[in-house]
Amino acid sequence: MHINFHVLGTLANTIVDPISLNYKDIPNFPVSTVEGHQGNLVFGTLSNVKVVCMQGRFHYYEGYILQKCTAPVRVLALVGINKLIVTNAAGGLNPNYKVGDIMFIKDHINFLGFGGNNPLRGPNDPRFGARFIPMNKAYDRALIKNAKEITKKMGLEKSTHEGVYVMVGGPNYETIAEVNSLRMLGADAVGMSTIPEVLVAKHCAMTVFGFSIITNECISSYDDETEPNHQEVLKAINSKAESLKEFVTILVGNIAME
Ligand SMILES: O=P(O)(O)O[C@@H]1C[C@H](O)[C@@H](CO)O1
Ligand SMILES: Nc1nc2[nH]cnc2c(=O)[nH]1
Image 1 (cartoon, rainbow, N blue to C red):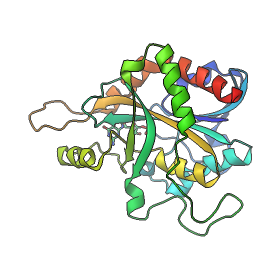
Image 2 (image 1 turned 90 degrees about the horizontal axis):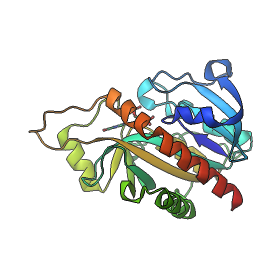
Image 3 (image 1 turned 60 degrees about the horizontal axis):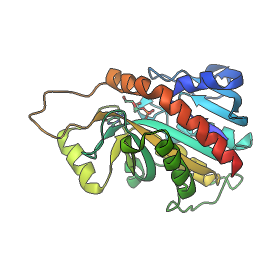
């Protein structure tokens, strides 16, 4: 199993018998440039399950093309990974979402993809998957159900949601008009990542589970004096790190028993 813990880099510290490779030491791997993304590929076990954890991911706004951002997913496919857990930090568009809430991703809106910017663009490599892939079952329903049961047992039910993630290019946060438009489209949380990796994972026929940590409430009023910033994003993630580590550890154990 592969775990994409760019927002939960500390989880890698709970991995048993870790073997950590710095991205810069892996030939042709991109290098992490974002604060909070440590840039290690960590192999080991979690809940007695063999896992690979990406401690840091790559974003389009860093200047990488989407094929480069998602190349690690293909590397993971080649080492035998067939289940992917993706995580991200996201702004809450849904007015019911609070900072620190968890949103299980039930579906997504690929803003970059609408314009044709897609990591699967270009000649198809059939060694990985088919030219045309369905996305209506991108996020595994059974794993969402399983995850809900875990958060219920952990007493996190009230701060847990199931919603739609929308990816925009970044690196700027949204204008008020953009926040209101994204809400009208039916998105619950907005971020700058994840969807390219999910597309490549589905192309490789991986089972995908994803969740967002709501790190800020998107601002939708011109009278609001506050502004979003990356430090509050990092702070919100760190404040949830322990319970999210527990959640993911249990989830990984449950997935292995399926
Ligand atoms: O890598 P993710 O999507 O979790 O990180 C989000 C998007 C930007 O990298 C950053 C903005 O604060 O957080
Ligand atoms: N685009 C976007 N990405 C985020 N990542 C964390 N918070 C936000 C946000 O409000 N907007």
